[in-house]
Length: 267
Image (cartoon, rainbow, N blue to C red; front, side, top):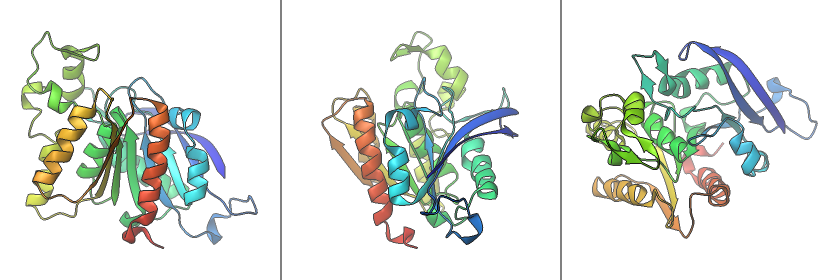
């Protein structure tokens, strides 16, 4: 196993960025890229107030990466929900959906096949995984969303005095733009599904999980019910649990088992 921290200049964000990378390597402990079979890859996103170190610090992702022989790349979302903000010229969606994928494919021995490329995350990162996994559906074969912060359900058309989980309406407007135009936009996970389905596009496989005591349980259940109503094939799991690392540590293990069982991911 190789664990790297990488800095590079992002054109999407117009500054230097940092991400962590986990690369399973063979028993010789040598990064002999030329002789290795290209690895599957997972772009794993952190939650609100978190950083690119969270998954390494609080879960068994290093062990699981090695066990499942999958490269894992962990960028930072910086409380921007992994969406693009044209006015600030900060394109977080483009960064995780296009630029980071292309950069890592150039640098590391990972597969360039859609069938071997996945995006996932928790809370804010779970929303980011759904939004960008759907928006960049030609790149990602699967989406993992743990306790996803599907807050378009909560903040669309919010009044100026609106508050959700200690965050106020001006913050949400600074991230998502005009909240009266949020529904139906490319930041609306329901609209993205409907647009792809109407166009006959291939949808990524989806794995959704949330604890029944989580403050985001209602929006996760609502999205699951929406997917059922649209006849969208997906995996949804709920069980007792809160918005905790214990839940996400178990969740990412289950999700990687799910990836390994997908017929399209077989080597």
